[in-house]
Length: 329
Image 1 (cartoon, rainbow, N blue to C red):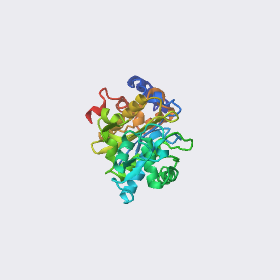
Image 2 (tube, rainbow, N blue to C red):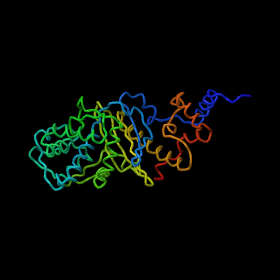
Image 3 (cartoon, rainbow, N blue to C red):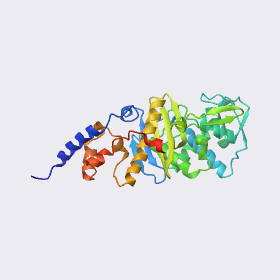
């Protein structure tokens, strides 16, 4: 008999995959049809992209915008242009910002250090604007600096018009650009990055809690920022470290907070599991690990055949562990 054809291998792979792969919950492929959805995950050290879905599609960033606002603040501190103890004043314009906000009155003031803390945790729009005005004189001037800084960092598809992420038609980014920003902040300002790890901070006797619930529910996660607007959907950039490896996952446009959090959890769990399997010699990807049979396109199947990964042992790696990997972090 002759050598089995590629089509024979493809048919066999589909049959094996259908038997091995369980239905994927709302956290994965059921989100793919959401018009606002986009996601990416990368290795923060090497920059390797481990997973991407609509990663270059334009999206509204919502409050993840404030990661760039704080990056610029950290840059100003590092250059000696800003001091953590310096008071910044709340203008009428800043005080009038929509929630989420700290609620300080116009004419009051807040130290730079406190401003950074409440922006990173409560995502306070009024304080983000006040900080922007303090650094650049106006939010509009600061937004120009944001776009310039973004492009310098490699965020070629991003434009910013405000410091908060509040709805603006021209304020657009991509999941890939947000991952690039998150990686840059971790890399460039490791001394300041822990502000995103705080589950809560105290401001004049008031406990300010962090909107990033994964900090307390998913071991290993130590930042970075959530967001939500009706236009953007629920957004999250999260970073987790395990055994000297740091992964960054970004999900934009999720329909609910829970779906967003679950999706990021699935990505991070799968990412660390795949890296573990790779360390044991397996050739496997996160996309394969998460795929449902319907997601295994002809192109992906052809690739599996050509790279020699389409055997029973490798396909078995696609099945998520019964016990979530994160419990071992």
